[in-house]
Amino acid sequence: MNTPKIKISQQYDYNVKQVLFATQMTQEELGHLIHETADTWLRRFFNGKIDHDAMLQSDAFRKWWRMHWLDRDDRCILDFIWEEPEDYRFAKYRSLHQIVFYLLNPIAQHLYQDFLDMQHHFEHGPVSAR
Image (tube, rainbow, N blue to C red):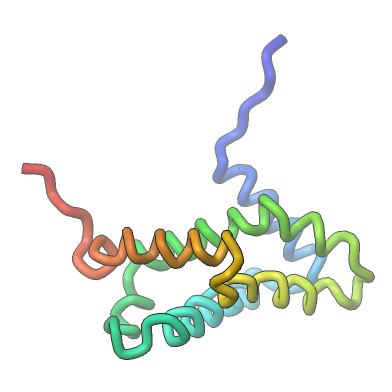
């Protein structure tokens, strides 16, 4: 029996639709929430150590941050928000994404280390092959 396969981008697109429906946010509000959290995260852990504004303008960083965000939604957050009353889902969604600020959590540790591993790419673009 052939198991149907979907691209991860299709799963993430579907998940975004679930988030928007469950929380009653607009696409624009979700975009602002993702950006706002990235901004706060960079200031919290890398204030004075990086060019903060340039990092937020980096297309590679923004895509990387969004990928991690959508991955958290897929792995655990969507399951939790559906358990909540409709009028609390937006608050629950926001609070669950705050896990990135708690460095004793493995998800936050992975995000932090992955940022350090990717930082040069974010700041200078991909390293060209010689």
